[in-house]
Image (cartoon, rainbow, N blue to C red; front, side, top):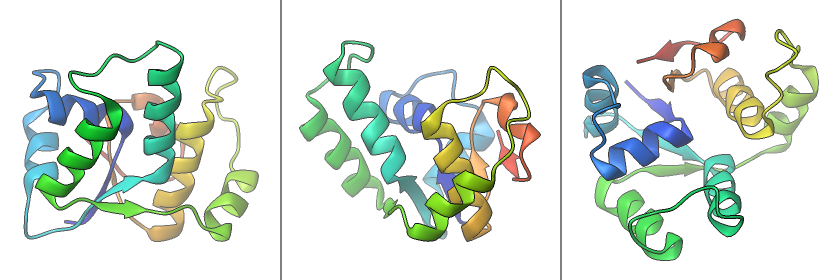
Length: 131
C-alpha cells in the first residue's frame, strides 16, 4: 500500500525508536509499495534542527538523504493543487494549526494516499491515518 510518512514517523523509523508501531514500521518498510516523504517534512525537520528544537544522531544533510536513499522513499513535492487544498481545509480544532501537518494532510487528500502517523488530531480531517 502506497503511503505518506509523517515527519515523526520518519524520524522514529530512522532512529529505530520503539514508539513506532509495528503496523507503521511494516508500512514504511514494505518494498512492494511506494513510501512518500513530503517536502513539508523535509522543511519541518530542517527548521527544527536550525532552531534547536530537533537534535539528530548525524547532521541533517547526511542523515535525511541517507535514510531516504537507503529505503527508496520518494519525495512528494508541493504542488499548486496541494497549496490550494490547504486553503480549503477547515480548522476542526482551534489548537491544531500546524502548517506542516496541514500541508501533509492536503497532500494526502489530493493524492488520495493514507498517512502513517501517530497523531490522532489528524483524524478530524478526511484522510486515512494508519498506525
